[in-house]
Length: 263
Image 1 (cartoon, rainbow, N blue to C red):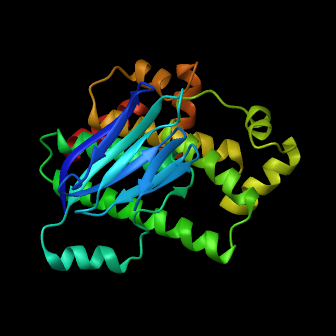
Image 2: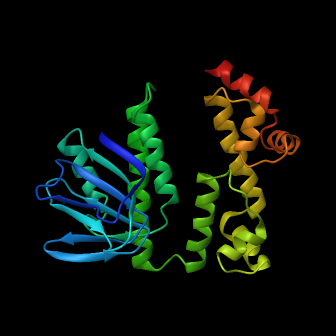
């Protein structure tokens, strides 16, 4: 797979529009956080905030802001190394030129990771980017299949959105009460539903997400460990170090030394 260009967290003014009669010469994946207007075969379609849209190669690309609104999006221009790879993608059944409304947090994390890999000097950056793209395609297809079959409940969708948020932004301050309020559930109902769906309590999963994020920072950056603690959502280094050791069996400094020795 070829990543031609990628961007994230772009916010355009209310006069923003794209008009490419012959397309961009490649495939285009859009994650649109704001309402938007897409023109398909001469017909305008208004999409809600939180929409995914994929243009196939060679198709006109016409989209713009809703009047008096901004346009916020992540995007990836991509193509395939050969016909066989493209056919494999098409066989997945990922909807093209069809807006799909779904939580964008995890997909946005994937786009940011692709951007990081593209502009890094990582030896396996191409393979990593391809895996992130495939994962997005799988989750998009999964969403459409779930919508058709009705297998996923609204409750599961809401709680899954929360889980995506704590893994993509583990540094955000959260409590059981505030998160239960976010999904319009009582504290007890939220805790029961979370454990039912994910096999652990919300707090256990939150700690797991923060420790996982800290492990990534310890092994891939030179940040001070105290700063890593704060960046992982902890107000107290002592609290961070205790939970980190409970989860990994190592202190943060021991884990960093071990990771550096491996690399």
